[in-house]
Image (cartoon, rainbow, N blue to C red; front, side, top):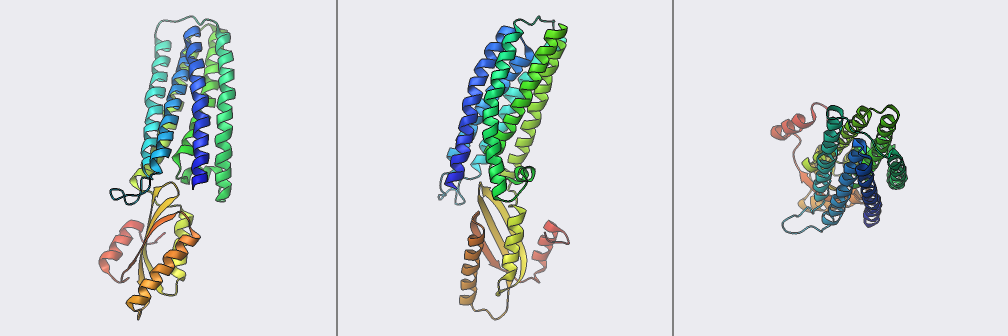
Amino acid sequence: MAEEKSESTLTVLVALGANFAIAVLKMIAGLITGSAAMLAEAAHSVADTFTEVFLLTALRRSSRPADRRHPFGYGKERYFWSLIAAVSIFVSGAVFAFYEGFRTIFGESAEQTRPLIGYIVLALAFVLEGISWVRAVRQVRADAAEVGRAVPRYLQLIDDPTVKTVFFEDSAALVGILLAFSGIALHDATGSAFWDGLASVLIGVLLAGVAYLLGRTNLGLLIGRQADPALVRGARELLRSAPEVEVVVDLLTMVTGTDQVLLCARLDFVENLTSTDLELACVRISGELRDHYSDLDEIFLEPVPRSDPELRARVLARYGDEVR
């Protein structure tokens, strides 16, 4: 876990350094050229820089150990700061890009000056963003391979929003640079500022889309998402195979932080177990679960009768006729 945190921190630091340098270059170029797309990209890089600061805050604060006030730890604080980062991308990036785009399209036509500076800055920005993007891609691929999943599926189930945020924001940054380059080039070729404004609006749409995807991911984790389906299926099979367990009545899991899962199992044990036998069985089963799944942070095993009508109704209400 410490090694994974170090990898995530390095990925975020690389992105932070690249975005800060790019933001300064784009801002200068935007003021010189008067390009709405360039200014939108400057706002994009500023938003990304703030995002990295929020992500570093998330990594630091979420690693605090559990205490009396937070007995399950501070793991979910990583999702809160990552959600704030998504809001930052929308507010400081997308909104400004929309404003600049519509102002350019519907306002007074402005002549573009010294577009060559814009081309040079965007080319440098593409190289710097590419370095950060390659770093994020390598980590995502390595992590996906470690758990035996394709990258798209891994990104869908990942419980570390920092890596996902850097990957999506860097991907959006590369696309945004291409849009800005196209806008400046078309403005330069046609003399019409419409293309520059359109590029700025498209950058705003791109940022709004990324902010929505990241916000939705962190919202689900904050609410309390089920653990990885592979972990849930494996834990259920392990519980069913225990000689003391007759029926797995209910199995609840929740992600409480990156690589941290809470598991609660309601089990109907075989008859004629003494209280000592039951205690020893629970201890052994908990140990086996932790040996198989290192992400399991807290495990609760509750003996219940499978025939209890109220409990059965709650389980059916949650899963339907087929328990998954």
